[in-house]
Length: 472
Image (cartoon, rainbow, N blue to C red; front, side, top):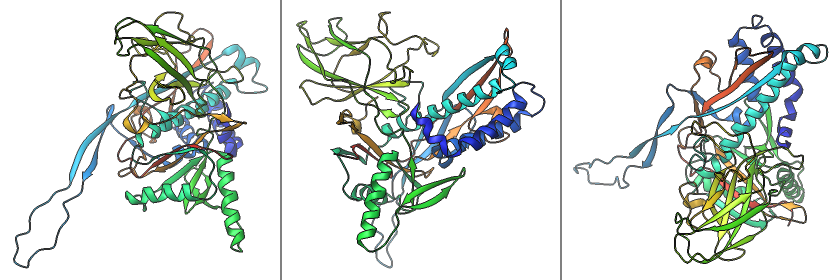
């Protein structure tokens, strides 16, 4: 999974740190008290991800976090006569809430493997390290792309929250620093000037802007490029105008939708489509973010009613080039005219039972219950108004579309608060906790979990730019 590259800077230190904690705790259980193990886990998570190092975590009670959102400032106009009666005006604050979501994974190691490999590697600690990294990838994905309406078990991320400053670069490349300045200006206009903020962009995009900035300085007779800043967790990040830049592979397409897609009409009376030809493209949402959508396909409805639907069947779940499942969801783009598809739906890639347990089998439509149905070209609440003009990512001559975000991390007037509840972790204030499970048969089991959600306090000081390219 390419996003693991994000962790390379501290990988050796992290592995030795987590390995020391796990080696003494997983196998024996008495050498290291659980609280110390959890502190090691928490510290490692922060070092694995600058995103998690920068947000404000807050331990809460219960599964719902309530917060105040300023909606209207007091009325303008304070000029008046000396003996005038001063009228009363008030700001308006709305009480809002966000439901915490359950993010967890379970791993196991056989005692046979643990015993036979102990001379070379602590298999239990190695496996927990890998689960911890995967857990961090989950948290990053949900913070950026989660969609609580499209998938009730996710919390909303920046892609869905940011509405006011959502930009389309129309598959062109930046030739100067205007796009970064414009994002900062839009944030400043809404009150973000004094807030902690970060840019997020791909390594290639960071190199592009570094070259542009260096060229500008060279023309002016100066040398150098982006400045650097130190942030929590031991991270040293590049910065532009004192705003740190997170170098992430979670915002650039690297792959294309792989499963075969079959379209058919449905006359079950559950839709609102009439006769006509419709065009569909589907994009997988992976660790690396939104990927290139499938080639345009069409389906013609001819049932003669205005209650038809489009049935979409996938040959298999999307996998990367190595054959590994790395998909969280699919974005469905559709239109009644060729070449003009826009986003109409966000569909989870996993199939869940009534209790919310994900099915480990492939998403292939063979059971008759896991096809994707499109009954209207009008999006639901999973695609808010600001996303309804989004167009799919593409690739030309090996150059992929990307995104850049400017994330306001202020917990009150931004999108930087990550509340969580964790009884086991309250003693050390940890977002992520681990729990050894009862030994079943001849293997060791453990759980890695977080109960959390990103708070949608105020989105207008953040920005999201889509379909930008390093070359074009």
